[in-house]
Length: 395
Image 1: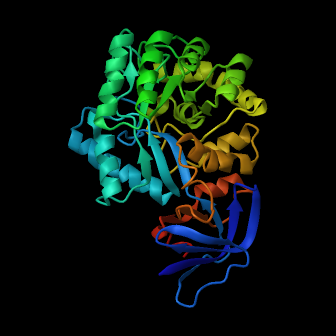
Image 2 (image 1 turned 45 degrees about the vertical axis):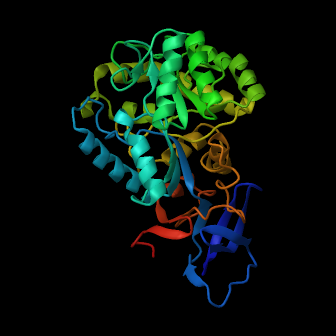
Image 3 (image 1 turned 90 degrees about the vertical axis):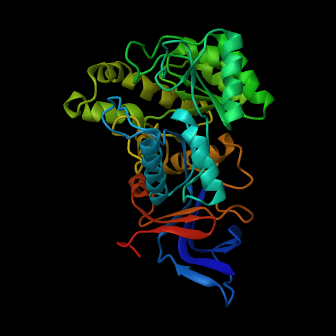
């Protein structure tokens, strides 16, 4: 049976325009027609969107599904408890309009198990890509749950282990970071040769590689090593931007992660060393983002959800911060839809309201092109043509 979503204002992220009073026809989970003058079959199952705004299902390209988004103090909980928490986080993401994620690191390969469950239909969750355990130097950023490796051969083996477990991405740690005690964001960690060994293994297997990289030396090491995206990127210069444009490397800035740490601070129990590192880097981070935008670097939306007070229902807050730092609302929405789909290699099937693509949709009460904060109030989520969330306040 055909489903019809009628009387929606459709955001066309491909042509960068708004289609008023549009209709979307869906059959077998695929969009068959979309536009302002689309005829609705007599036997269609009709959902009246009542003038709400329809966006392609949102992506979050940097989440930690097993984390609690608490105050950052490490918890000792069982794998079962982490899995239960992750399932709840995935539901929250769906209910906020997010239909596709990339998980940026999970313990004990829980992410792969949940990915398999999602594909089998055992759990209701966003579609996803996974990275298993990050690869870091001994004692480096993320070593608590990551795979410590030293030297190119060991990094190569570590990457092979993650691929064997089912990772779609290999995550490498090029610099220190905020969340690990005793390391600094600007300091390089895995060397260029170590990074290259892991990246080569990813690419040989048809997977991709991304890097936690905040300081400039580590970012340049990772770029020369061949990574496909830079995460966080606190400090970058024109050389970085030129290299990224030439080689098609994406930037996932995660502006939200330091924002929430600075907002809540030590009064909320966030460790002082985390707050200090954020306070020392947050302005440079925002300026780097603004420069990357002006330089024309490809940018995709990710929040680092799961870091302190960085909640799973706040994916769209990254778009709010992008607009505050110079993007137009349309550009920010594209970062969370068509750009993100390109980064994850799914542009043929996702990222826009286009015939032939999956019917993944997010519906909002107001128009985010007029006020980007409208993306924070999801009214309905549609996954493969099925309504999986409907706000009782608006429908």
